[in-house]
Image 1: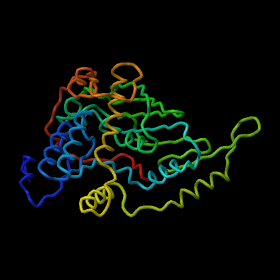
Image 2: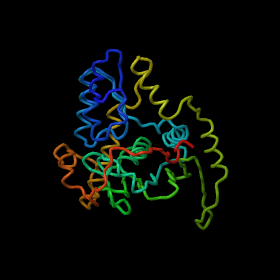
Image 3: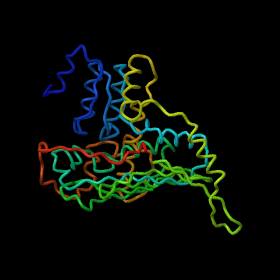
Image 4: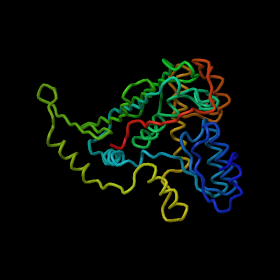
Length: 333
């Protein structure tokens, strides 16, 4: 047990570190330090709180020639991997519209912890610290959008500077996606729905297929639906899922047994999309996904001057007396 994580650098028997329990604002500093002293690094979400910090981490990894990976465990869930395969193979033909619901529930006391609910230490609210998982899945499965229109608000968490609701419209060539992130919904119904030309695929797994009647009204296309289900069933499952699967890939890559599947550049994509959503919400306009280095939202300290402070944080605890954690709904069902 170390009170100062920097002391791990002196341990010659430690080859890799996992940055899990540090506040998000310390991810970049810790990752860069560990990479520069020769440790491989696995970072828990979010990778960092700004694009410039993401770039600094990636540069440190390249300079040290040590591996860098960012936790994106939901990519390793069986239904996610199968739906990704169906999309890649255009099993329902072209994707027209996506709906992503990253819905969680947290009480007001959740934000009493000292680093939570402050833009400087948490980087934002439900979007960057909860929906980051779904943002990563969306861009992995259908790519990055070209434009973003968004709003954020805080409707129920009065001890938080940051948002508890974010809604974004993402524009792609020939496709549109809607992302809702919130800490307000009872039930935490997390879902991703991909509406293709000939069928719907969703996670948790469900498929629906319609064909049109002579008057244009729908009737279930049972034949095509069976083809889709057969295709889904035929895709082989993996032995490990979630965190164990990603950690195994990370360790195997260190030993040269496998290629690293999720590196720093992959982790940066989710942060880039999240920053674009914040930029649109803060400026009140549709923004291009491209955020160049001279943009204020590229840099954390400049972005902090532009974000809304919904409420003043007045309660701050070092820790909770009891810290029972109940997990959200499993995207892997």
